[in-house]
Amino acid sequence: MGVIHRLQSQEHGELRWEGVPVRAYGPENSRAKDATRQILIGNDEGAQNFHLRYFAVQPGGHTSLDQHAHDHGVYVLHGRARLRLGDEEHEVRAGDAIYIPGNEVHQFFALGDEAFGFLCVVPAKR
Image (cartoon, rainbow, N blue to C red; front, side, top):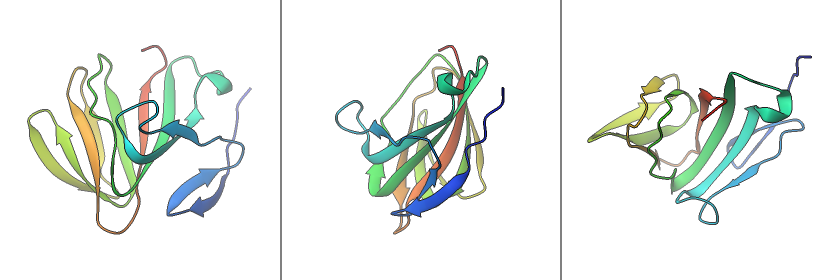
């Protein structure tokens, strides 16, 4: 059976969906700083092929420096960030779509005074 998670509110410039817990994504369990995540489509929804996550990074914060075997699809919803992608850096902003191939080093650093938020699609089995 399908599931709908309705956009509920904004909190500190971050989007929040009804019934979707805000999960820890920070120094306690990763190398991220001032960041949160919500799993919008994942195991709880019975998704067998892909997962859709929302990440938000407060000004001055960053995601963890990652490198995974699986590829990612990223769509920037709000804010701006500096993206480390392999050996290069790029500025990204709302509306940008990003493909991160498997085993590519990547990390987002929030820029400006607004929270940076993005959707990330990954394989369910990783």
